[in-house]
Length: 43
Image 1 (cartoon, rainbow, N blue to C red):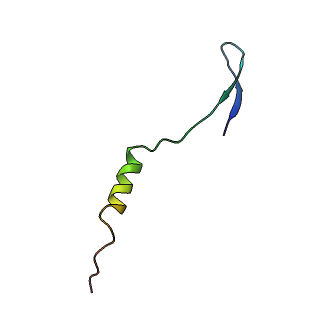
Image 2 (cartoon, rainbow, N blue to C red):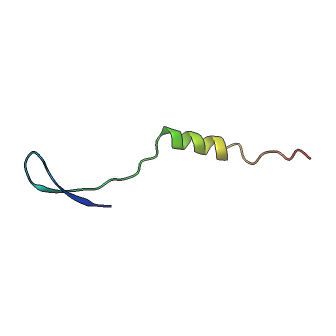
């Protein structure tokens, strides 16, 4: 979501944009939950 702000140093109007980048924790959770597959049936 673009956000307009005023630079405190030069006074210019700037537009900031944030983007999501998956971190280490996301990759770790994904691999531990989905790579091994479903739990084996105990019955």
